[in-house]
Image 1 (cartoon, one colour):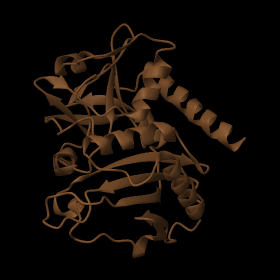
Image 2 (cartoon, one colour):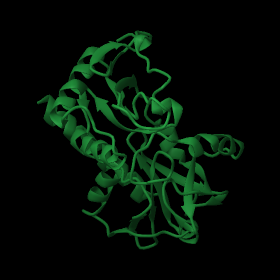
Image 3 (tube, one colour):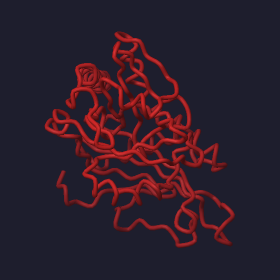
Length: 285
């Protein structure tokens, strides 16, 4: 498909070109930044781990008292049609449920559902081979278990990240690390135990898959991780739908381990590649 072609989106009951899709200014997503979303990857017309993402989407909506206007099977059919219409090879699909057209700019109304698909560029082999640098920042998201559209702090911190040549910012509260704005965090200890935060986080689907893969070979723990423990870790990495697994080699200017991507991290990345390929192959077959 021509990358410059206008993609189709789904908005409030109809498919239409993205340049024709719009929300009224009274929507609470615009007025107050109120709404939830979720995002999943598509490869070869196959949405990866879709059931997990839909479960999280409906959970987020429920916690924000936003009724999703479609049952899960209906939503699956809409997603499948959108993927077919756009015919992209590697892409991401974002589902956004807004607070609706509010009469007074505060009270929620009937939610609007927007589903859009866009081409997706995954991390390069060079970035994986070099690893990334991150910084830390003390902050706790409101309702961490909800995938909210409110990314104010993460976006505001982009300036500080760029100043310090960092790729991501890791949140912590009272000396305990939590998550990135769009990713989950892991460390590998000296005895090859894989550890990831257990609370004040959004539980990512890639996080879930990595924990399952790692448990076949290593000891895994979900618990609090202190900033000091991060600095003493042998390896560190982040996980997300768009980044898969990215090695972290520097935190606040301090090298992690040898300052290069570690063997456990790289092995788990290969395991994740294999899992995704298996999911696609089963659907295509």
